[in-house]
Image 1 (cartoon, rainbow, N blue to C red):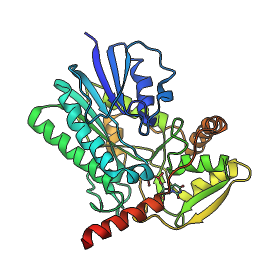
Image 2 (image 1 turned 45 degrees about the vertical axis):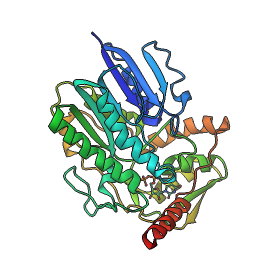
Image 3 (image 1 turned 120 degrees about the vertical axis):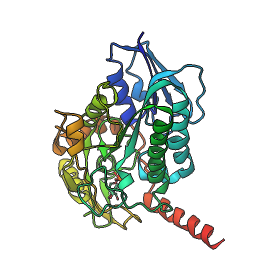
Length: 341
Ligand code: UDP
């Protein structure tokens, strides 16, 4: 009997790349993608004609079915600060209640794989960050809906593993970029590319010296494929997955500005609680996934992403990302009102 697999968020940026890999599996019987097109898009799966794929347009936290699945990959959640800041409660529901509903849909002993995040490290005071680092997160801050719901979902899944024996795989993804990011996504690389191709002004929040480790999507999905569908790995996670070359935001912007004539940097006020640095310690990842490396260097990855964006933006996709500065201000005002009430 072939495997029944469900992917929540399978029409999203990373999810659709996972779907491309899953349909190459000969042992796959059915693949159900549950996506509400909040940040995902139907067009990300438009090229998939495999009859084993079934798309269900639904919220993962309330998705109902009598079917049970051998493997569930829970990805449904916005990952871009402006998107999760705009709808924080919905973000918490998608991650946490979505995970609960996924576990409910597993066959006994079935496997759930969860995409957690380097945001669980908050603004880290050690670098690189190993999985054992407990992080520095503000549980009521402007990023908390994302950071804390990922952290709590990790806790929930580990407790369910202890009490019910689910098979678990948790990854902590560092910044991922590449084709199929929404042009209006708002994260650094996609924003800089969209801006460079439209009004030419690349918005740098703060001094731009804050740094991230940027992983090209094909490399990251290679690691996910190796980890999520290997039966011989006896490690539930968490596992850092990313590219460990750390680059300041301003260098990324300058690199992109040099690639696109007319593009220039625009310095903007800093975003509240923007982490200053982020870099994965990949020691464990290299041990659990021998032979895997993030092989596509940043310069090549950005060029490939630019090609894809150039085609999208030319076709007139919207590039209006909401401003995280404004959203963080609004969240702060709400919090002030709540604490003075
Ligand atoms: N960033 C920026 N300009 C933008 C988008 C992002 O300067 O137009 C900065 C942002 O403040 C952060 C870094 O780039 O320091 C990475 O932001 P992103 O939203 O990509 O991811 P995250 O903050 O979740 O790591």
